[in-house]
Length: 502
Ligand code: NAD
Image 1 (cartoon, rainbow, N blue to C red):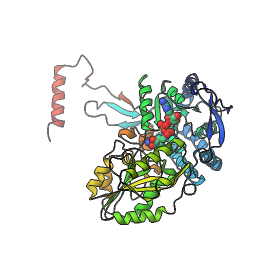
Image 2 (cartoon, rainbow, N blue to C red):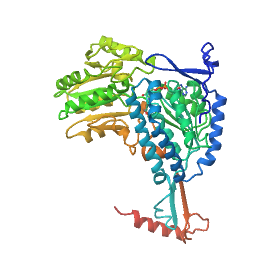
Image 3 (tube, rainbow, N blue to C red):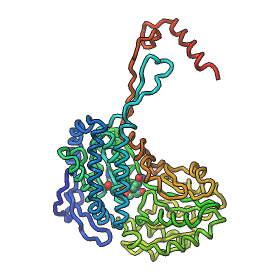
Image 4 (cartoon, helix red, strand yellow):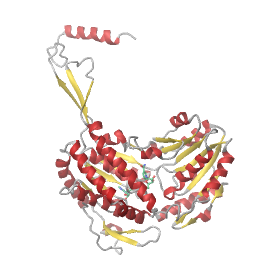
């Protein structure tokens, strides 16, 4: 159930700070879809307080009981996938097929998190070591309490659910602030949770609003704040969370590179680069933005790109740009590159026809131009010729971002993947790691820190709890004022025997 879900007429005439509602618009047409309340600080704090009370119940359930509830929710979403996909498509502008795919991937992750939480987070014994042989040692991962989640609009289901689904499976309750471009999706998620788990609406709540609502969640003393969005907003979120020493998970932007080795399947690499760069209108944090191609295969690769990109058209292959202001960023990057000597081998400045942007592929782009250094977040690629793989790796790593990457290579895929300074890499495909529930997802540097998905993603929403239990009394009691010098001598002998060789 949502905290503030009832649509109430807009207050467009008032100043931003005193507005109490905002509109969700269809990107392709600008048509108003619905209005949503803007949650203020008081309402956010009240939601967190209710989530704290709900944690008394949800946190006390066994893993199996939570799995039952989360499976009911997953099943409900699966049954209503058509209705949900229509809403995702309406708010983001992405085609229905892409919306369905996003939801299916999410269901797979929800299933994995619910089924594996017990194995990953439940108590397990560890060795008690040499000095505490008379103790039993175990570690377990209890939940943190209330998790605040702030989400973006580009994958409004898959991305925040990487935090929400895993945090709930770990036993936390959640307050979610969806992007102001996709409030309906956030509201739908919380409403369906309320239907699937009746009587406990405060376990997962959505509070809609703009940036200020997110800022209020940062200072509401949640157990952890999971943020997904731009690196610029991430900095503000961290600063706000620092006030109460609230820990943060940062899933921020990227400038992902794809490397094409001399023995790569060039047609497959070109197809993957086009999909990695253009799908979802290029509005993918782990989308391909830069391609580095071995000089021996460069001409062949550019030809393959030209050939294959010809069929890709905005409005058919992918949808409208979701956020109007992003179109200006794409235009600036393309025009700047062209002004500084780049050539468009697919599309060009004319490809930008709001609210759509057709594919643009640029070659000979100077390394210091914004199309290479900044996140473009549009359906564009830069393709750069390199002398060898060392140069490709150096150029791919020459960015403050470090989210994901891809390598196409016959023999050296794994070796090159390990040299890339990113959280994730696909070899001979793009973006595949995101669909594998057991793999952790996240970046380094400007792309953030912490992990969603997989065992790491479950542990992210817990604290490690260490317990030692004395099984029998040992004459070698180290934690007593009664221990004698003789005991220390015995210990020295034991330690020499154990560690004194080698
Ligand atoms: P954004 O930073 O503009 O907004 C993200 C969220 O933060 C929104 O819900 C917004 O309302 C909220 N927000 C804005 N100001 C805030 C403040 N001061 N305090 C707290 N919250 C505030 O990002 P966006 O445009 O919605 O999303 C696109 C960005 O997200 C891109 O940079 C993309 O790469 C990144 N992204 C990263 C991942 C990942 O997993 N690493 C996934 C998807 C998107």
